[in-house]
Image (tube, rainbow, N blue to C red; front, side, top):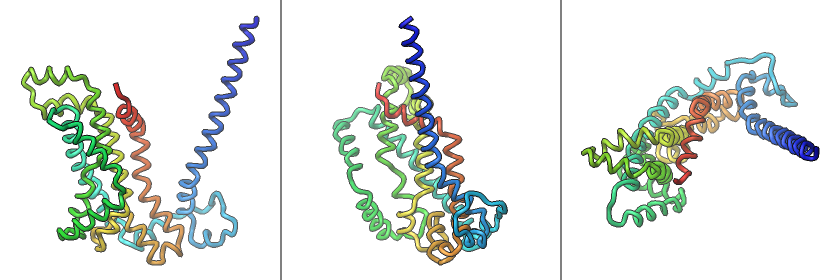
Length: 287
């Protein structure tokens, strides 16, 4: 009898704990999602309706898409969008080549001083980004690559963190597979392509998506290295809308531009969220 009471009390405590947990998660979800809701809501309010609201309204009965048309006509946002797509695809592709080869070298190849080199390589993560930006700016400027896609892309084709993450994933693959492949006469590149990459696909997908998000949200470097509209990215476009007075005056159109830029990343994350979590968990687990 006492055992049954204890079981009921334990089950009741478990239900209460679960209910409290879900309630806190729901509140936190509302806190996180409300800015996105407010951004979309503001983007579909007319300029007059928005300015006439003394008390902000949480819904609108007369949505409009005029703000989206205004955002694309205030600045060449379509061109900035296309530039960002090109920049993101090229940078991500080159980064994957560099990251995969470097991670494979640190994980599987044997050479003198490998551990020391890898330690020194990881120490680069301790350098503040501001110093790296200054060095890259001077280098790209002296090379005459300002206002070019090459100047935009080159400083972003490698990442110490992504190399470390993929190297840890490669290191979890049993060495016996590598030795067996070598006995069969398989080259290192063929082993990398046919064995390691398929096994470590979740981590590779995670790195790819994170790099796409990083490139899409890039602001400081494009702002420094470009002053020609032909090479502006969407981040430059948002800043230009704000600086030319249009965005400060027409907040709904400004929010419409932000929605257009944010939607691709939100959709990308929702489609691949499970792969992102699996890749991060795999890269962070040793054994």
